[in-house]
Amino acid sequence: MRRVSMLVQAEKCAFLLDDRERDELVARPPAVGFSREQLRTLRLSQDEGVAARAFHDGEAIVVDANTALSTLDQVWTRRLDVRNFIAYPLVLERRDETERLAERVTVGVFLVLNKRGGSPFTPEDLRLLSVMSRQVTAVIADAQVYLQLTEEKEQLQATLQSMGSGVLMIESTGHISLLNPAARALLDLPAEGTDGAHFEDAIKNEPLVNLLREATLNGKESGVELEVELGEDHEPRVYQAQTAFVRGEKAGVPTTLGVVVIFNDITEIRNVERMKTQFVSTVSHELRTPLTSIKGFISTLLQDTEGYFDNDTRVEFYSIIDNECDRLRRLIDDLLNVSRIESGRALQMNWSLFDPIVGIERVMQAQRSYTDRHELLLDYSGQLIELLGDADKFDQILTNLLSNAIKYSPKGGKVAVHVEKDEHDLTVAISDQGMGIAPEKLDKVWQKFERVDNRDTRQAGGTGIGLFLVKHLVDRHEGTIDVSSVLGRGSTFTIHLPLRPKEALAELEGGIQDS
Ligand code: ADP
View 1 (cartoon, helix red, strand yellow):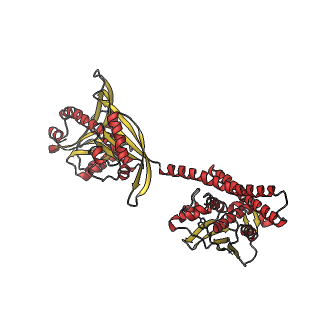
View 2 (cartoon, protein in one colour):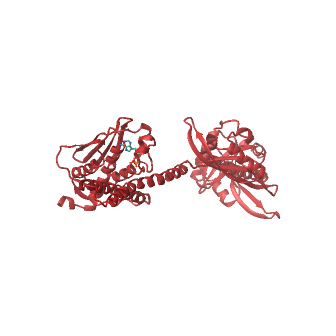
View 3 (cartoon, protein in one colour):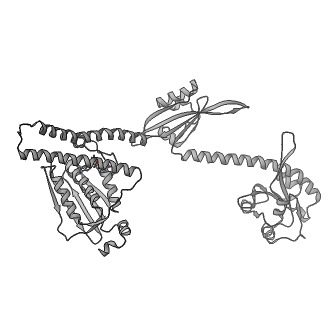
């Protein structure tokens, strides 16, 4: 640029490049005779003015003190104190293998401003510029390719940096050429000092080192599961690491440039698999227990051909069988409901107006028959409540919560159902004096198949779907459910239900008010 300004005796010169997104010609460094700010703000429209014309027509335009200028040109020439100038198109010519002209692209405009001494630019200046502009264009073309490459590289790097999956790349010599933050974290490697190191020196994870050896020494792509502890709290996570060769060309010959390892976090998948296996075994157990008892009592009754058992005993046996059948049916209903929710179908609601206290008393009565260690108490003395809801599902919510309260207080105690009603909501709190739930497990009890696993809960039996269903049923009533608990002291599950859920009102459309 300095040489150009010297040859044509110009005070200033700059080139403007085509900014296609904005339809502008934009000045780019380097330039001569411009302050940084002047250069940054030099942007000309591609629709109007001398530069635009030179750009579109591919012809140089010489402007002197007598040339009539458009408003746009008047503005920028006055701002930069320009009295005369040349706008010279920068034309890039691409040639094919036979040196024939394949393409002509105008990439921008070259501006040469203010001939020294105040005289106008001459045809001789134009000739000099035509020679120089070819060089300038070639340099710009290279620079643009370079810029594009750096931009693409930056984009790729940003993607790799922010990716959740880990990426590690090693050259065919075994030296690390790329390690993104996710990979760094899971391999517990420091931020510095690993780039360029050999994987055998840098990486301590034995299975991964073997995997990389397998790739670099034996030329085999393979995968391995890595169990790692992440972060300061040593959170256990499972990653699937898979190698793949990076193939490319070196001097026209296909070759392997290196090996890339992708780390995918499969902790959740493994957890779900583990839970499912556990679930199948607990469900089988839960199904077998009532069946064994039903079978036992029926066999006993069948064997009694002599009429040894009196009527009361027989009735007691029958009622046990009846209860166990109910238990089986509930379990199967729960399982069906879960699979319905799983497949994305919301549970169908049968809306009606009913008195929840009647439902609560019925469920409590049923639950009393399962225990003689617990005292089940209802605490409500208010007026009649009319709840708009699904009566069966309301029963199901209470049955689940009450049976849990009993099941998880094996030593017995009080199970209290406290009911409150205000203008819009019904609140039901069920509290027990049982084993309680550890604070860190409180959030998890709503997840399906989730059971707080310890000796006491294992003994109590269960499938881990009860509270998942309860939560879903409460949601369908547009209500909320919370739990508070003190380990070893007991738990309280509290539900808030709107007396008039919007969905029900919409469905019944005024029918309720009329009735
Ligand atoms: P399940 O009882 O079949 O295991 P739930 O979904 O009903 O499944 O409950 C999930 C877990 O929450 C239970 O395994 C238990 O550990 C805990 N839990 C539920 N209710 C209580 C309660 N009242 N007291 C203590 N722990 C409870």
